[in-house]
Image (cartoon, rainbow, N blue to C red; front, side, top):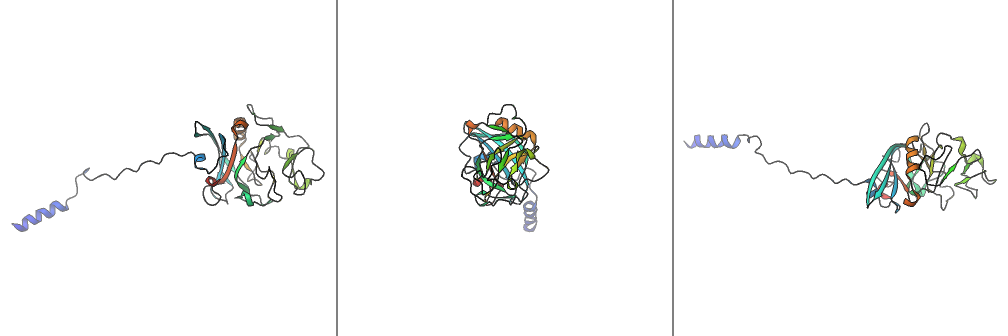
Length: 241
């Protein structure tokens, strides 16, 4: 009788639980959505921001997104595939000219220019490129990292860019503030946000022509627009700037 009772208990203990009787695992709360600009250390203090992010410093492609802040919250206004320098990306404060690297960091957007007319709605200062428009990149020139028209005598043509020579890439452009306001010789010149060429850039950030037109018609000087360039993680992570 005792053996039979123990056997019955054993059968009961070893029986599988009825379907639905086991306790469900605790639900994992969904992480709240945090817009990328809200994760940055600094956005420039304005209400418009462009982010250009690559996966790693060795990447030559990534994504550009543009954002608007309203009532303290950032909203994405658009995005586009991006290309970076053929040498990848590097910390902007220690970049070396001639390395074809895109400088990471946070920069303002002083003005636009292009071989094509400014798109409708553009209010940021915009210069049309002429036959004698140049960007001086000669370290010995007083016009280093500046628009020049015509080319100054102290600026070597071989170390500068004749803007009309790049009708596709420079059809529409935003100048970035990288090394612009207090130029450091040897750090680099002519870092722009411009239209795609055939491949990676010489250090600029590029996007398709349609996206460039939309960005130009969207930016407002009164909104103090900036561009943040960086990687997804590491010392040059976009969120560090």
